Length: 156
Length: 318
Image (cartoon, rainbow over all chains, first blue to last red; front, side, top):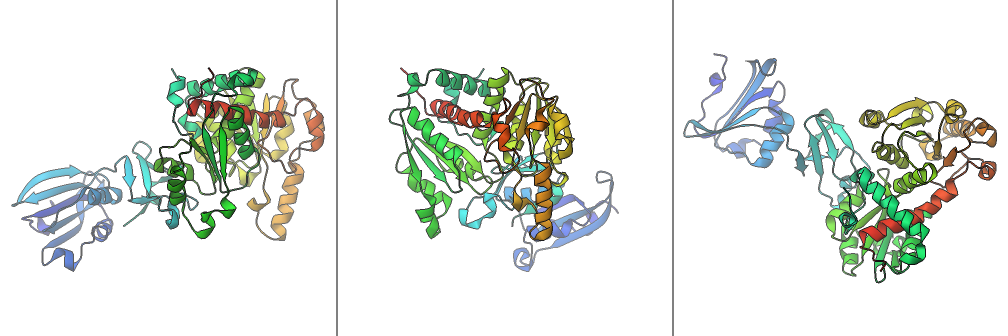
């Protein structure tokens, strides 16, 4: 009974699996899932399931009646890189994606250098951040400032 | 293999945009212009450079102006103090407006990090970064490297000491980055403890060169084995406000003060460089020694910027 099925059946919607412990609420928040968005649909959140991949425990999120844009997949990747997102239609998995942080993020992550032009709202410089998956570091396209995943400020 | 046409219409934003071959091509172009400037006197006829200096500058601004004039072009200096910037106009609006006047190039100095790349993204006009906040000042680095190469005939294998504010000094970061293009350089970083070269940058470059860190008190000993000492100033604003900060600043300033007596053990071809302006780190009595080379270095700012404008704007000397 430790395979995720216990937290609810989805007919049409999305399943996010292999979420690191504690990150599930961040995903719910960043996807803007609330009473209005659910519109009476079903949502299931489960944490503490056994996970070999995450070396311990994981979380699972199932949401009925929604789909995800590329932007929202990028948001999930920033919070839970390596999670699996399944798109469910008529009770079947239509597509399964292992979400990874893309090499270029536009308008999603803020530069952490306070002196960067992208921090000055008057200049209207859209945030553009490059990601190096080898070193797991972000680098600002404008000022070349580098910062780690733990420092990244996600823009909503 | 780098060739001249690769430079046409290009931006100069970061020193890391240039390969060793491209840097060498700029140096060769500089040599040609410096040896026979009259041959290039009309090579940029009809070209109009627009300079936008949002921060004070003497050497960089004036050397760019001299550079375009000596190549037969002209310049328009946008006066930020009396411009619509003072009325709250942002950088994109300023650039889009100036673009309508069909400039051949923008030379930009701005206080915000990353401003040069931002402007380059907004326009098809070539953008030359003349200093963007504490980020980069690539044309300074090109003139520094050119000066070292001119002095020593090579850059590979040199022993170079870099001293001063290594934490915030953009010229020192760019210089070390550029030296990583060359082989077997031995770089000695000399600074007060709280102004040390950023650790992440040392990690980035230590595979390309030998890097060692030293306290200011070791400077005399270190430079006795070096080919070049590159000094930068230490600014009062890096220290805390108030009396304690003032006392600490004065203490550091006293220990970071190069005098001729400290040059007794240097090699005959040893040279001292500095991006200028200096404050108190080089005593004026050093100017008379054969080791002082900072004014000639500043002069190279004009020659290297002539080469950069010539290459970017498709110069034609007949």
